[in-house]
Length: 295
Image (cartoon, rainbow, N blue to C red; front, top):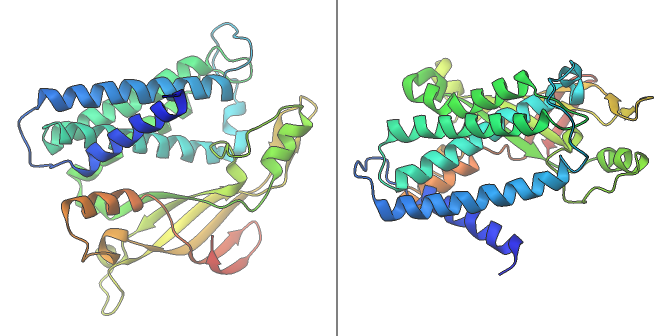
């Protein structure tokens, strides 16, 4: 079995564990803990080898902190990405531990610790990379994402607010700029392709406002991204661009597919609800534009 297949299998096992989790379980099952641990080790190892080549391929330098460029790189859209990364990691781990027998409260706290610890490990590697440095903001946002499910557990109002992401390839600027720098980037390397990513903060309208006829599965979302007007400066690094802001409709997947109420169905809907699906939207900045269906 080659490396890519092993990595994919490990992620599949972890995702399957989250789907089969029973949050009311209170007895730790050692065999399942072993499955989670081994799959997690394989997934983390695979992730490390991938980003080692994608992010940290250049010669290592002495430990350093980010010099401030961190707050202008991708105009902070990458910070939203770190938040979602922490959120995904925490959910994957807490769901797996729930399947292994841990109760909901404990699994959420363990997931938060895992997600923030993973972000810390990434920043420690960035600290030795020649073009990066340890970023306290990346660590803070990644950890905030990891602890978001914990906050929702304790606060009902926060359960009506969710973070989502969407990706649609509208521009090749990410690959074009890398090519200008003499760097060949995999055509599927979407994780740093910020001009084609949009991050969303969604609100359950009926939770905050009394309405007579607003569908319970239809939410309102605020979107955040960056356009494709970046360029290379004299230091051969990406700069420029404009932040994009959107207001859009959004679907609450668990409520939209409420009839799919089996344990597996609930978990699948939970994961699907982290993605913003095509819906009507208005871009309010930098230039007003109406989208009958924003992809």
